[in-house]
Amino acid sequence: MPAAPLIRSLLPLLGRLLSVPALRRLTVDRLGRAPVKAAPRPRKHSWGHAVVEWADGTRNEGWLRAGDGMDFTADFIAAVTELLTHGVGRPGAWTPAAALGPDLATTAGGTFVLD
Image 1 (cartoon, rainbow, N blue to C red):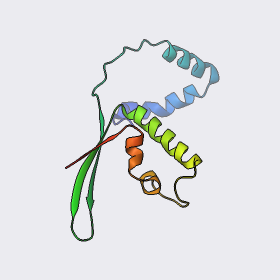
Image 2: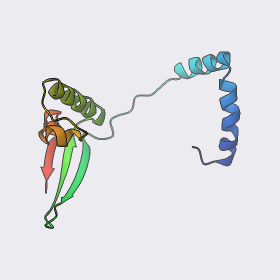
Image 3: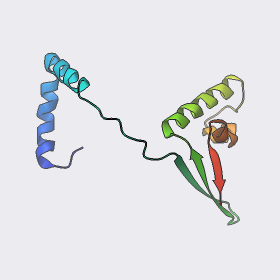
Image 4: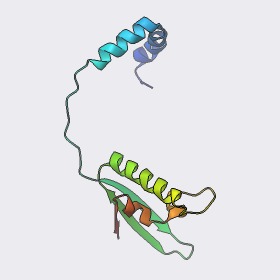
């Protein structure tokens, strides 16, 4: 939600105007024609970070490096789907890594970097 008071006060009016089908179509058409400039990728990798501490006090820290985050997400979902269709995993409510193992991240193209 925008923080500027003027914009916040105008949003309900804008919502009512866009509920008119002709105005909504016109707005969508104009937005669809707006030029979009291509931007370079901000970074080569996406990172995930985890710190694990066991009951005995042992602690380990690590990172998961993946390529583009959107590509990794799609590859991860495809890997989960493929494994589940082949009967791998166990019934119940689990995170993908708990149900299918930590190798799932590397199957989807990630690399573990452990400290």
